[in-house]
Amino acid sequence: MRRFGPTVFAEMSALAQRTGAVNLGQGFPDSDGPASLLDDAVAAVRSGANQYPPGLGVPELREAVSRHQDRWYGMRPDPGTEVLVTAGASEATAAALLGLCEVGDEVVVLEPAYDAYPALIALAGAVQRSVPLLPTADGFALDRAALAAAFSDRTRLVLLNTPHNPTGTVLSEDELALVARLAVEHDAVVVTDEVYEHLVFDGHRHRPVATLPGMAERTLTVSSAGKTFSVTGWKVGWVTGPAPLVAAVRAVKQFLTYVNGAPFQPAVARALDLPDAFFADQAADLQRRRDLLSEGLRSAGFGVRTPAGTYFVIADPTPLGFEDGTDLCRRLPELAGVVGVPVSAFCEPGGPAAEATAALVRFTFCKSDTVLLQACDRLQGLRR
Image 1 (spheres, rainbow, N blue to C red):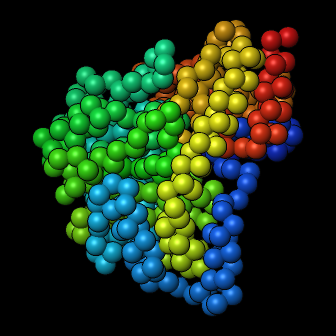
Image 2: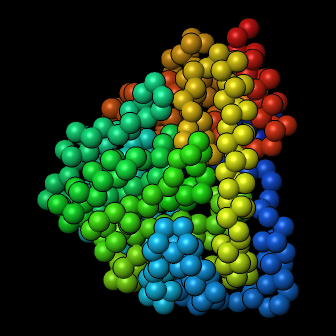
Image 3: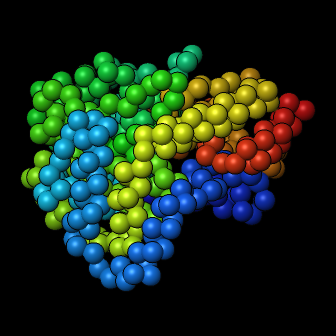
């Protein structure tokens, strides 16, 4: 059985705290969400919304999630049976895997993969089948032959993530269509982590896999308030999909957190109805900060792959003479006073994705200009 220790985020954040380095490793903003959201949460606390909410989540939030899916993607899940509020996207993903997988079932995952995925697959007793996203000159590309080869009569579930952490990839229409075709052919359920759905750049558009032909009836869509509204500590997420699949998730979720975030749920509900301009402005500001950090990294001598979405940029330190991203990240606080995360930490050891990303480092840009400029200035020291 695969053993899991502390996450790479815990290791690198502890390193930042111990050394006083600028922490561009863990992806949490250093500013709060919109004032209206915070005021609504305070009002909910003071008005008495402090006890257990309904098991499905407060009706106000479930209805807002349904409106949100309709407004942005033309899907309108039933708030009573097809929407479930969870303790963040991680719990939604965990409950889906535990609720849908039997021991020995196979789960197809794109690698690099968010580090919770392998642990959750192992907890479910399932078997991970990894498909590499391979570095290209411009970004990362899905290995389509490897994707097709990963499916078998044991495939129960596809665990998808787009926009993708850590690479910042937004899967193309063709790539999504291939995933959909293979899922239908092998009668697999797709669980799709879309927490960065509103954080896409340069004219890219997020397309939920559930909107593709034949996918609505076999897809669970997961998202959360944390990334969209810069309240990662609230841990308010949700999952939508066909009633039988959502019921399977709920059957497990009730024995995990049971319920969560009572005063935060109505606040998030109102935030989901904010005007389109709010979501556009959030993405534009993050794109600006992405470009600020990317320019600083290039100036410091890194190669940079420009992300199409998320909080993260992937940097290549090989032009500076560093071939091992893990070793560099452990030395970076001493060398430059900055913390990043090695991309290989998101991969199965020894696999093709780990080998292809061995040198690469992920930095986050969801920080203030002051923090980003300080980090960029410090990284200049690597040239010296």
